[in-house]
Image (tube, rainbow, N blue to C red; front, top):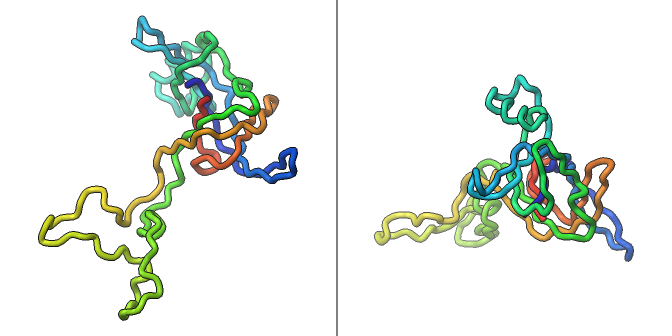
Length: 205
């Protein structure tokens, strides 16, 4: 799937032609530079590697600097490979937000916000004990029994328990493109996308 690398700016809402308020996310999509072209003969598959967001040369390794120098560009913070481009791209070409058109559907993936160590009510939507009787006074958000006894004498893998939450790679599919603003490299999609503000996102069509 072809696409672009972008940065999540934040959320807002716009009104459609019927006056309905639609929540949407604003993404700074591109411009991305083609930093490598994978070919069937050399690499065994066809893909285009895109780089996004400049960074200072002092913060890049010499190997990375040499890689980007071949494409005639400065070092990039984010590099992602995409397959399925209909256009033929060469090293150093630029892919802009005009790759998308209003009304089409895209998939957006990013790393979700890290929420640290959380209990089962927040992490797995447990109901908790609630205001129950039987002398409950400090167990309102407890997980309750986890089911182990003399058999199996252990806790099964994957048991829903408290633990680290967030920081996962999440893909949200079929978000409609509401607006494309080429002069500011902005893409407005319906709904929410994972990640914090200024998080890198990958947009695929």
